[in-house]
Length: 117
Image (tube, rainbow, N blue to C red):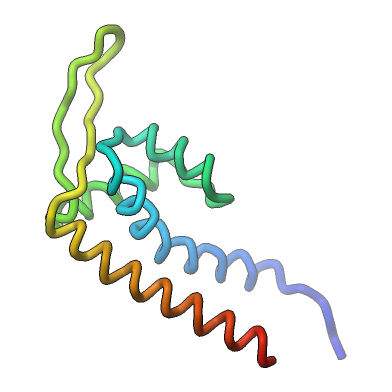
C-alpha cells in the first residue's frame, strides 16, 4: 500500500476548507466588538493557526458588507491614519447563529464518525 502524502492534494484541501471558515471566523470575531482589518488578522492569528493576508481579508470584508452582514465606518485616530472599523449587523448576527448551529452540528457528526471508525 502506498502511503506517500500528496502535498498538492493536502494544500488544495486546506485552502478550500479555510475559505469556508474565514467568513464564519470573521463574523465570530465581530460579534463582540467592531474591529479594523489588521486587528481581525491579528486576532485570527492569536486564536487559530489559519494565516490570512491583507489581500484576502479586505475583499472578504467587502463581500460581507455587500451581503449586509457587516457595516463599516472610518474612525479618526489620535495618531496615524484613520481606520475603517467593521461591525456586525443584526442580519449578520442572525446569519452567524445559523452558521454556528451548522458548524456545531458538523463538529458533533465528525466526532461521532471519528469515535466509531
